[in-house]
Amino acid sequence: MSPLIIIAVITIGLIGYVLLKPRWVEQRRDKIKSQPFPKEWRQILKRNVPFFYSMPTDLQLQLKQHVLVFLAEKDFQGFEGVEITDEIRVTIAAQACLLLLNRKTNYYRKLKSIYVYPAAFVAHHETKDSAGVLQNKPRVLSGESWELGKVILSWKDSKHGAQVFNDGHNVVIHEFAHQLDQETGAANGAPFLRHRNRECWSHVLAKEFEKLQRKAHRGEDTLLDHYGATNPAEFFAVASEVFFERPVALKRQHSALYSQLMGFYHINPVIW
Image (cartoon, rainbow, N blue to C red; front, side, top):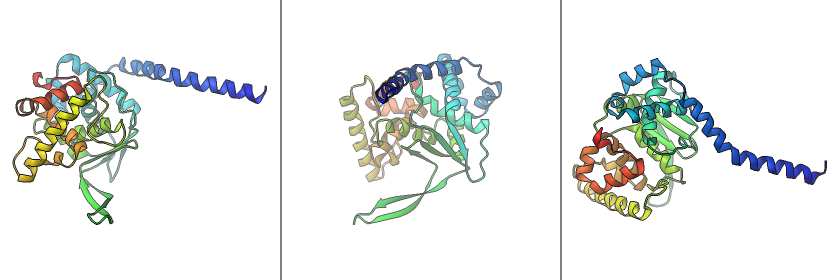
């Protein structure tokens, strides 16, 4: 067989693989979704994820199916003595999959691994000071999202966020909002909006971000955590936490922002 024919066969094979892979993945996911949700996992939801039972029944079913796929595809690794258990996996997955309801999803396509620490952990990042000098400053974090396939979480804070679902703070929602944002590149507060009006999204979120910055600078109490005033990416993540955990207050105080997030996430948690 001539080299040209071999190259042609390989090329056709690769094209076929690329074209057929999405269908194979979708079929595999449909098969996983059809599996029964383990009784032990339902007990974990009952014990650790009380918000699940306030959701409409159709969303409960969706969430359980998403959790099945998520746990079949993502790798969990424990650090500093954490032994990965079904309790850890299901509790984190239920919160992460909350962001995927009612729309076509690729299950955080860049994400490969979730690293779990027992509690807050120390991260080292290089930053430039005002003089442009690189500095490596340690920071104590409860979560972190990497563009290159990793989310790092404190188990203590992840569990607390699921059990106390009305204080507007949830590290899992925060970091997985970053994952959605990072699907389009570096996090910048502009996730892939599909059919949403990007101009309207940008206008509303920029206006709300600037408002939070002004109030944070003055030290005023705000519904949205002042950490959201850091940059647009953090604003989107903080706003997502409040959207899911304190939707009534967000809709009342920031109706335009609530409307944009409701359109993006395709759910209306006010009615739960």
